Image 1: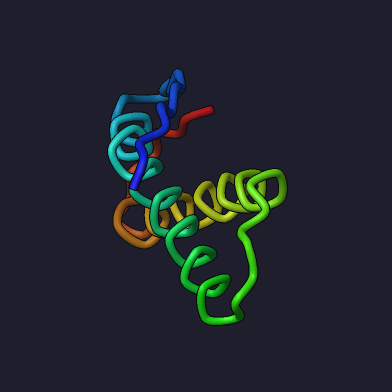
Image 2: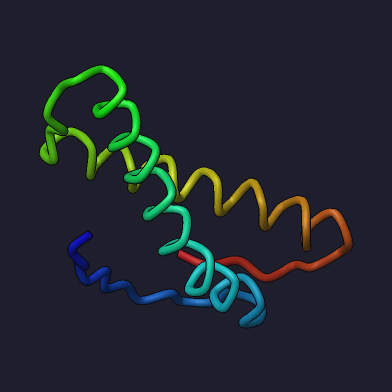
Length: 83
């Protein structure tokens, strides 16, 4: 499979834990969502529409990253955030 660069700036607020977490995990979630979409397309016998998959993948990846961060850190008192 081809590689696509993902460029981002993670600005930490109240510490760097959240920004570091997002920088590490967001690309993994983007790749996972794209892979899931590709698998659905293959199973359905249709071509993947990159114009709709990428925005969906980014949205879902941010959501998953935030949810995972909340479980791992916020519930244990971490106060940092990122944008």
